[in-house]
Length: 396
Length: 114
Image: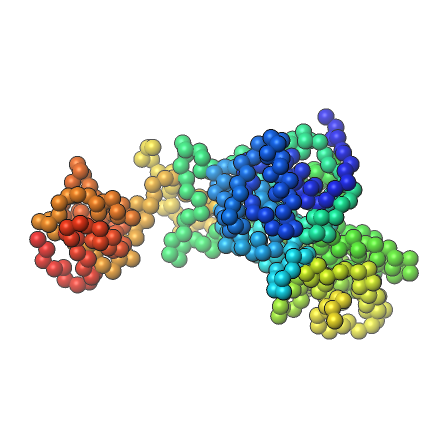
């Protein structure tokens, strides 16, 4: 059967709730938090309408939500949840337990900043705090990508070579709440793409009783378990690429760990994640009209970190800027910058690379700000001085 | 359940990271008896056979199932308390309605108990 695509005008959260319904999780345990709320709200409606047969668990906190997801996943269920910002922060302890127990939980994270001062808007401080928690981290630029990533996440997490939790991120309000044009696929196509989940070591398999997450004696094999998580995470890269290629064939939409635009002859480029890639693409086109060979490098997967792919995309450039939508106070730059620069370290030729912290707490990512970055890069490429230290884009 | 053990860790010291079961799963039930925790104990329960009424409240309350019972009677000394698993919490002594259990410090000479 050919895939039936339906064009819709809707929000990112609505696309994600629809993708969740199509993936038919056995259990969803969640706690509502702005700007994630409409995901779980719409999904709860699907459950109430009988359009999906999911055990929907309303919990009293995000710590409980993730705990319930862990229990359900260990029991053998396909599990999806959603949160953001402070909710993700409250799940902290349980994130590591989910990955350590190698449970293929899928979580949507609608990137929201962390207070204080109180703020509900977008930046990546929430997920970047969880970057070392052993979860695969995907980023979406648009509602369409959020939908696509959700469906792919289920396949990636449940792949027998991976069995790691996946966090699929979309930018709070910008992607979650603005209405745009997107395409959904028919239920049957999604259903057969994700397939059935065959759990291993399910707690509900009473004939074969097991216990999960134990095995640690004093001075015991904890470090070996962590190493095995590292091996699985490294191995997941090729699985993500394979699932992405398969999905592309189905959807007709591209997927790569690192997506490039106008990079064939580019001399300068901006590396960015999430919705701001759209702003960068638009300004890069304008810069090209002005004679600057500008390009976009969009990172769609932050964990596992696509170092090789980034090096391949950036190695011929005269200057690179990395935009970080989160702070890592006291570090040598934002997390995307430090890892990108580290990836470039082994190159024979040293590429000038500049870091900009931008858009914190939903501060506007105006086109003139992106243009100023390209102008800086153009100056550096022409022999100008690389600015020292950290740049705060648009901040007074 | 059969007594055959699926969980063979005899060669564990030479296992590499990928040899350990994914997710630290132990593919066998009832293995906590193999994990001897009595070494945590600093106080040891001692029962006075003369005072004890065999009500078995200690057996009910013991959080570590460390009190041995056979034929509805406490096992005779020195088998009453499974010292491989008793952590010396003293709940048995606290709950005993006739104060037949005393907690004595480990490392001291045991008092004469009747």
